[in-house]
Image (tube, rainbow, N blue to C red; front, side, top):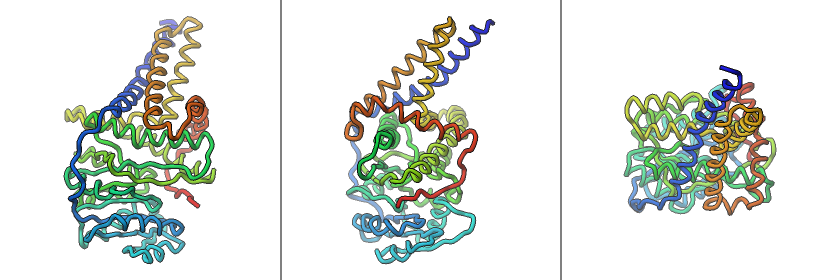
Length: 394
């Protein structure tokens, strides 16, 4: 085989590999356009325990707890785990009427350890349903009832629609990040649900039956502990489901340092879960003929949107160059098709769910945002972040 033939073969293979996440991404966007299925009402629901892990959240914990208490019913509990705090988070939580337990540990730090401590506290009087909300989040009206009712009805973990917004005027990168968050946490889970697939756990607004959460492997220092928990539960036959009727919201950090820290943790954690779990989940799903688990594995195989755009764009550029010198003609057409599919899917997602966030001019400039994250992706292979670091929200 000549070197031109070898180049053509390699480019074709790369195009075939990238076709999987591109097609899954486009399929989820297309399915999200389908009408919503009728769901049962949320008026009847069991008592719940609201579990709030908090590490140095004194500045915002009162507002979060007031929001949660406004949706509670008689028989509900509100438990705050003040985890390794060096401020007065615990005192402020007690002042808002919450039950508070405090935890200190020199080495075991992170949300997973705080959740495990909270579950041990609840074990003395276990509730039917546990709802986990981060200390910087708020539930929209009716969200708690919708989450608890869906969890009770299905017996499965339930993930709310978790959205993040920016406070004040932000630049292009901030607006594109907000749009990408909507695609990942709203549009794609909505589409997955229309396809009959499970969803990933995205961090806040999660409801669990007590029988599942009491034995779940929570105590770990993973930087994406929620995503990892969802995958573990799915592989054991208890895949999470998406509840679009329940919305939980939060704000992106404002300082450049905090934004960089948060993005690195999310991107490296996402890529770590993808590289470690996607293929084993696919094999397990195929062995069991479990098509719902296969759907979740395929969803996990889709890299972050910025990285997906960069990979397809890079393949297109290399294929075009090779086509110019007489190699990879088929790959040129394949890369062009992939670029077209990604662009069409992003355009549909923007038209239906993103116009309030991005202007048409912003959308045209969005590839610059993708390039700005190149350093984060390169560090995944050289200096991957593995330790949990709290995002500074001040």
